[in-house]
Length: 107
Image (tube, rainbow, N blue to C red; front, side):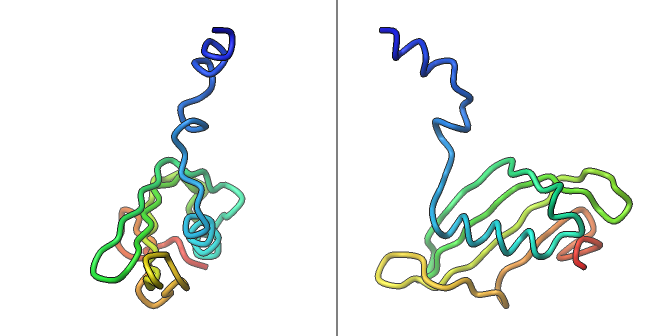
């Protein structure tokens, strides 16, 4: 009973957070695209398989070039290798903010 009450006090993100190798690779790639990688904070993660590819979508907050914190979305495409995500396809991955793909966020 004591364990149950302790678990109920944990943040939801600790109980339901995604933590796969594909998510980690996607986050690293996104941090390389934004103006202020140190301000990056993950808000939401989803993963899906579609037409022999694995996609990771991450909604995140990060500062733009003016220091304003904005909500953005990164979409990473991985080649499917025997049902598991393979290498990140950087040519088919993108970061989207309010002004379109890579608008104002890239270095």
